[in-house]
Length: 57
Image 1 (cartoon, rainbow, N blue to C red):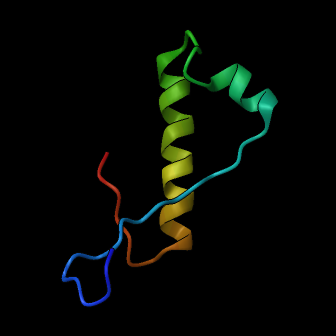
Image 2: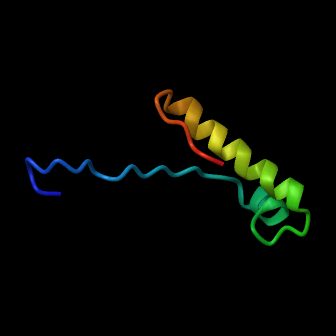
């Protein structure tokens, strides 16, 4: 974004998870509630690390 531009740069957040956890509860997990719990947990972590950020779910 050029200097002086009124548009703010996009925010990017990354969360690392154990490969074993992702294999059990990742996007190919047959248990939808378990998968959603993992997503909620990651979102809560990002929000906790960034108090002014509120993610919509």
